[in-house]
Length: 181
Ligand SMILES: CC(C)(COP(=O)(O)OP(=O)(O)OC[C@H]1O[C@@H](n2cnc3c(N)ncnc32)[C@H](O)[C@@H]1OP(=O)(O)O)[C@@H](O)C(=O)NCCC(=O)NCCS
Image (cartoon, helix red, strand yellow):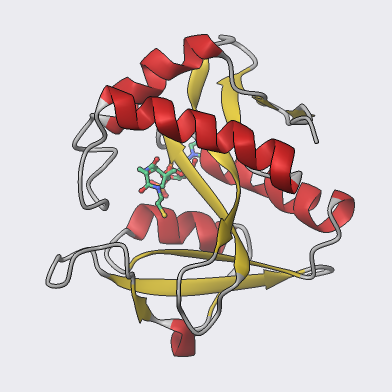
């Protein structure tokens, strides 16, 4: 399925364009944006990621949206839905997630986009439950989850298998939300 456009008060969630790759690569090479990830992305890794995002849209009918501000019309990051398939007590599941350029933080854009993605997940895709997870120390991302009304499931705490053992960002926390909440 093609990526639908979602409009919020201040944002357009839309399909990925080739011109998004440069600003996305800059974000993914920013140590502040990538503080809670095991490594920065090379330009090639970002390009491959964009290809995977597009493939997910056509294969699954959901994926990550490219986000732009309505007042500036340029790419500021992503918000969206992603399949969580790695081994954990709560998988397989569908995750809501976000990554914005650091100069766009502190304005409510992740929460605004996340809300639209959750509505789409429940109302258009018919999912019963969406999860979100992040490194336990990623307080900014946890606050987005809490602002979206997601509830922490302490029993779901896990060590992310894609993060090397001993890495400080490996311990993760799990949040859940359900249709009709
Ligand atoms: C996680 C991330 C998206 C959170 O971004 P954020 O800007 O802090 O979150 P929001 O967009 O919800 O903005 C909320 C903040 O905007 C403020 N704000 C300002 N104007 C606002 C408005 N009009 N509406 C709502 N909030 C507003 C809120 O008070 C809040 O500030 P606070 O954090 O000081 O309490 C961002 O830090 C990021 O991209 N990090 C790197 C990638 C990452 O770690 N992703 C998650 C991996 S799981």
